[in-house]
Image (cartoon, rainbow, N blue to C red; front, side, top):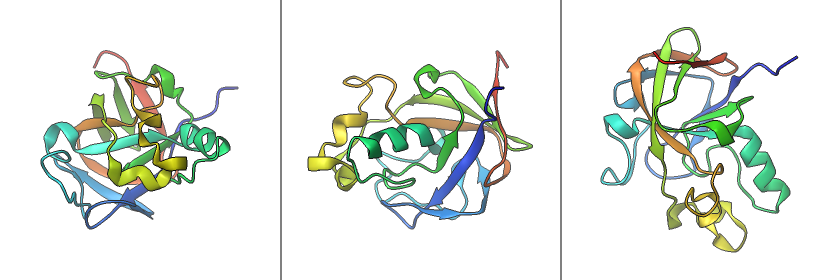
Length: 158
């Protein structure tokens, strides 16, 4: 039986990293209410409203010796149960009962997240160097409320 995909963590901050976990969040066109970006030139906006990452990738990186934890690389939503290597721009996910997001692009890691990596090697999650390991940005198609452990569904061609 296939594992059910769920929201493993919802993370917010007053700007910068790490983002800290919350139990639920309101999601709108510019992302999660109460979450802020310190650098709005590189983060935020409608095409980068939320950042998503895979729980399994975080666990694999920890097994490699990196001190990464959920939210430490700035992701807003940590997902468990989706084969992250298959996630590509254009894909849509339904998060919980109503929120729909569309992946817009892979993120470009920066030195602000170096504390999450052994020897500060934040390029360990750069898609050009390590395909399938990058966080992704998404735009909000439909807003609403998400909660920890909400189901996630991959939507086809919607």
